[in-house]
Image 1 (cartoon, rainbow, N blue to C red):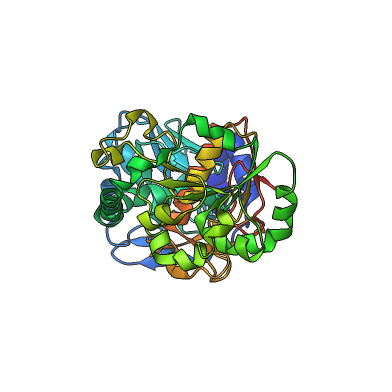
Image 2 (image 1 turned 60 degrees about the vertical axis):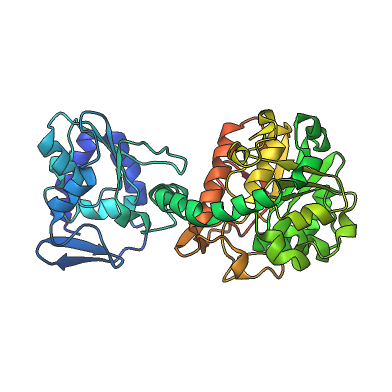
Length: 432
């Protein structure tokens, strides 16, 4: 860092954005950064081994990033890079209004002492924002991918949300080409079977008390069995178990009030592991999906009710439309369980094993193998956990966590308690 360059840039920054400049400096030296010059056709910077911009055609890359953005509306840029996108936008529209969301503030401080012309970007058309983890995503925006994978300990949830946004098209295409085909096959197989089953409606919400425990299958579930038992022993408490947590609960002689099973393949692939003793659950209610494997529906001994989506009506046309999507079935079985508790107007939702992160190389509690994890595990991400460690996760887990955080934000009257000490930070939940 060149002190003379830094002073010139910082003075200009402080004059234009005094509050931002003051907050920014609290991040100085807060992240471990190795910055190197990378010279190709053009010069750029390598930060912890990642190029901030192209070293072949920086303006060309900025043009590519900007091409789908309406320059006559507010433009949000997530990340700063080297400011190329700001320069390009202002060259095309001098009146453009730009909000730059600083994803790596410690890096931005370093850039103040490296780029001698940075001060030129500090003007009335450009605003700088230090975000929070729940900062929103705006459609008329640019996401600088290079910054999403730097310093995962800083604004981790926001960075993961932006990665999920970029991954959405891939995930949708993958779902339509693979998972949806399996769902449709199960729906057709269940066509006659469901005629004798009962849909889950508002009349069934009385099964659920105002204090709800939901057990996910994250590795931390094993670590919190005593606490789980203590919370379950309290009066007026409903324990709702996702199906993949059953083997851990079984091992510790915990019988839930409700089991939720929505995935089309879980019973087919893991019946012996998860449902090895169905007699144990003869007094436990099963909430399943219309696409659930028919063998579970046929052999389950206790009361059972099914949920279904509007899309399922394309095959199951005889079902009443009024109950379609009564329960939101989006993301993982844990997300569905949370939505059931919300629909039942729970006052407190206690989350056990809601990790959304690995623990070392362990993905699930109990003896569930890695292969049971979501199909979208080909991209490893780094997430900040409740013990302040950075652990590996995957795209699917991070997307499920984002859905949960939205449910928490949308339901401020419900107290969400998170008992996973080693799982990913869940914004809005109270750590217990």
